[in-house]
Image (cartoon, rainbow, N blue to C red; front, side, top):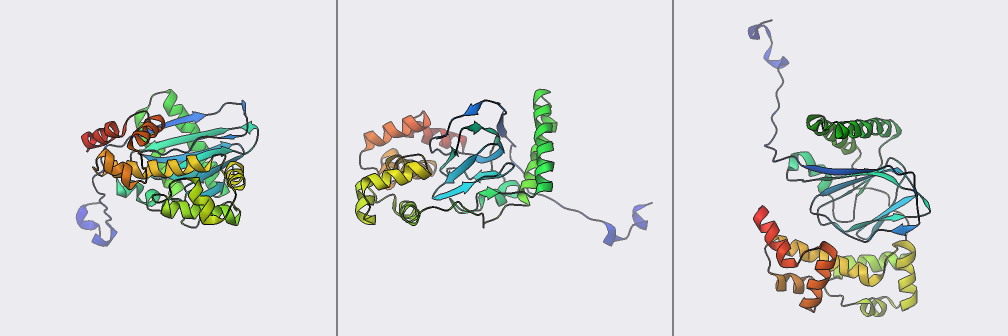
Length: 282
């Protein structure tokens, strides 16, 4: 059939924006070993993280939201979005974790458009979970054979399937009203909150109850949680080109030397090194 014989209405065309370098890091954890009940420390990344639970009893805290995962569920966290993984019981913990450099709004816009701590949970239906499980197996095979093109196509397929289930209405795990109010207060006012004494006075709660709530539901301390919020915000300031002192002060730290020490302990580099690294990458 010649081009003249094809009706113009039968010809379809699409064009996508230029996509920068496509870079993905990932790892599989398929150990049969039993992991004891504990929580990983709160942390954040410069990339989009997609954590996929394959087997285990897991909750995920993102900002002030807590999500209870079923096997096959995924959690998405934007760059610099504070989160941690909580193992609720002694159990195997099998999972896949991927980090995407998300410079392309075309590819990743649906995964990074949510507000911090909102809409992080992706719960595919049974059919999609079966399809995704097959893709995870194929990704493992492509990894073992070092087939980069196959890895590329499979990770795109994983994104395609997960994208169908991205929702801003992700259901969260129920928290006590007192803890929910405190987490919301910290989210909104962490720069003005100097320490846990401020929380105690603002919410008329005892120190022991405050520590118990954080330990029971988030498996961390109020002090560490507030520090992580401030550090996360300071990284945003550094990425925007603020100097170390300004990033320190705007994030709510009162002591710059203590801020530098905490930053180094969390990220294995100083704030200045982080700022320069991001400046050079841009």
